[in-house]
Length: 332
Image (cartoon, rainbow, N blue to C red; front, side, top):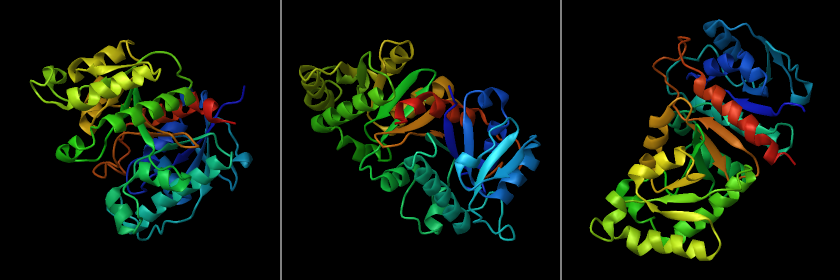
């Protein structure tokens, strides 16, 4: 059986993306699991190979089908969008923001066209995107916009623990307005379909509680009584295998032990803290609900260490590994 072909974006060239891509492509164990086509810029990639001292040869191609997928070869689609005379590591730059967006756009086009099986992304910088006047706040919004997906689902996976997010980039005050019965029902339904698309069909999804001890029947808050529990009960009547609200101080531990196939976290840090405490480097973001599969590292551009060759590549390798694991379920 042939290995999945993963389109790997270079991310913001001024960050650590190129370095962790070089380290990942050079990894012998990862090579056994996936073929990769890097979407980026040749001079940036060759510079990253020198910085990391990896034994890699860059092979520039226009089409993934023309790649040389042998160990030690980094196949690259060169978008030629960086002026090295103006390039600086660790700096917010409109040039790099525009380049990072173009790498993502190309990777989406390749995957939608069936020329790659999935996308694995490296970090981008929101300030650089803004400087380039790119009208998206981040990766998820870009993928949603360019694939025609209205509300992509974010799922984290680490060591078998899967966590979905009912809300993401909202203040805690604004988040509370989104904890509604209808929204929870909608998300559990869509998250269940997303799991099926990843080949996960058995088990129970848990809905995390919001307040301490899930509110203690209104003693510490009424969201569980008025919104969360009624949503879970209605979902059960509809045939969904769902439990909750399960107190947040125990639900993630129970899911990590296998009691639940996934958890619906109610807000950003609730799920982030749980997954990243379990294994920070191997917490991988998977964007679901789209016609293509996208995985990503869940760390930033690390401008402070960019260009030094010291960035760890564990998360990038895991992102590619998970893309290869789930890609067969998306290939038509």
